[in-house]
Length: 336
Image (cartoon, rainbow, N blue to C red; front, side, top):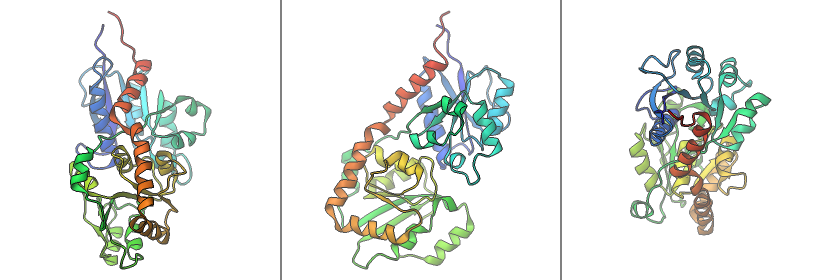
């Protein structure tokens, strides 16, 4: 058997970053390294020449985000013609105002396979050639052990909601604070909001709102975010648009209740019949949903059961099996 070539994994971001693309790329590198019979992996930037930090003969390219990684995709295709390119479709690719950008189109055309985190993303591929290249690859997360969660998160009240969202308009980061101000005084809820302050205007607006029951606490490293999730009674996602939220996946993998805006990216992970969906941008509806969670034990149980039912599809071994099947079709072991 001949040793498999190493694949390059590129994403917009930087090593050790806390954005979703960074975390997904680093998780995929770990998983690919667990498949030494097929591939190895090195992580690089999404620059025009991604092979520069790599010494050797790459077996292929795995790129996150069609538009932002377009320089890497096109540079790799030009330097290594015929080598496979796996392109993961991002939410801002698929749901961009005005449709597909020119950079997205070039990346999607160059890709050997287009990786979609759920069926809703695959449905956005509106060209036959792209649809033919679509491959479903559900994201995973390491589940929090039930005993650890039981110690860290005693049954409420009071209740703690966790919002993991950088301050970007697409994440609707003001909605939780606005909703918390609409809660009745006897609704025992506290919302902890962590994220990078990427848009100063939004940070200033959060400071102006100064909601006593929704605190913006700044960025949080992945390990600390996992601890915060362990302590939370529910995970909150308020996005106006979403691809496939890592935070939602992490909550589902551990069977933690999720409240989320009814946008395609969340529907793709949760399903259209999920009991925790609310209209995007509707602070009143979110406040009502939080109130119901606090006051209705049967509703809390339904949300927990919904997450537990979805947990198996987001376990790491399931994603690893999907990688093994996909890569075996692209780079089968070769005999000496």
